[in-house]
Length: 628
Image (cartoon, rainbow, N blue to C red):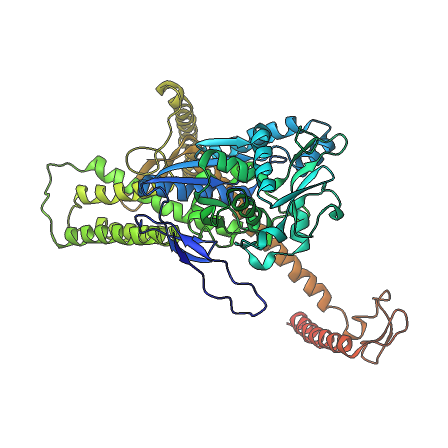
């Protein structure tokens, strides 16, 4: 391995990023934002081949999976698919499940069930959510409770190497001894010593700090208290600490040196830094992980997700409102390692981008259906230009992907390609060359398939079939018959207005529920198939937006009415009714003392005078309006 360090940190009070050793082997041309250097490093598999080892921190299963989980696991699913399906790496992808932890014990007690019952139920729910989001399952799944023997053995080796000690039935990692030979805090050097983060990492049921030699030391093995789950060990009955589980399980399957480790930004310290320390202490090595990648924070309407803020959104709740494809599109148009915001506005943007691709695929399918190969096929200037645009797009997309999985610019580049293809298609002076259009659509589909936006074959996103033909078409034919009966009645009554309204309702409210969308154009109406759930949620979102517009309109009218009523008040009476706030007023009626008799401060008086002056203007306008 060659040595590399990140740029020196500017502040003299900050610790520098420790040294990083680049693996030796064939360069891949892929650059990854490596948290170990806080910079982009070229990815070199330690195997010297296409084989890549990857460990990802799985969930602590004590509650429903939420949008923060979606952010992390979809982001790394996209990266995994890119490395596997676009770059051809053979990836061994290992994920753990933390099924014993302080949070699990506490939540199980609250619900009056065992920790096993709780963790198994939450784990099953998590994987159902991942399947619904089209996240690939891991190649190997490790549960803490199934790796107790390996964890105990791992801890014994750390003690033997002189980097851990037993205290009152628990075992702690000796950060002081470790720091004499290694760098502690490789990912976030300046978080070392942060008492709040250390406490959160140890858990709510941890033993007293006095058991430890140093405040930064952390538990590898916890002595179990009464009624807590426990396993036998050389130090007595207890259970694993949070950090040690990942070190032991990842190493058991992937070995003493791992190519990639991933997780959420919030896990950098202490969890990931402690993983690194334990493992390097165990193996007496300088670099356990070669590339550490972290997903950025997820905000909900601009704020950190929290139950106390009532903006905690589970994956199931999100899937009731949006499709998995729409949610994945949202993550694709944000860089995986940067903070991003989940809101109605950001989702609306993602849905609009999805529509651009969907409409293009429908357009191409229509051209393929209606165009014969018997027509002219010679290439003219426009054909050659679109083909050149396609080849340039391929080069651009490759450049973006190889630059830290830049899906944001990939999506924008594909949109540009579609835009130029639409201009080509809409040229009425000549028929488009189907082979070129098919080539564009096939390439766009290929990239979207790599990103996990579709698993279907052929062009576009595809539409899943349901049952046999009769079962599938029966609801559609029922809807058509109902519509025909309605049209006959309206035609007999000669009610043209209601006929047009019924036609629009059939288009907007009925057909989408059966997976059919109709577009009315100047040249006539065209139809296209679409996923029923996509159309249903699109209808619901449209109704929600319209409802919000109506509510905003009502709120505006209400405010205007309140403003009008307030403008009727005589200026000298504006504040006098507020006896709970004020007790004395000047000759204009502006308060001079609060309700306790204390004189109003200068800053308060300034605001009151400003309010008074504004009211005088509004009252004058009111008087003028009633005169007219």
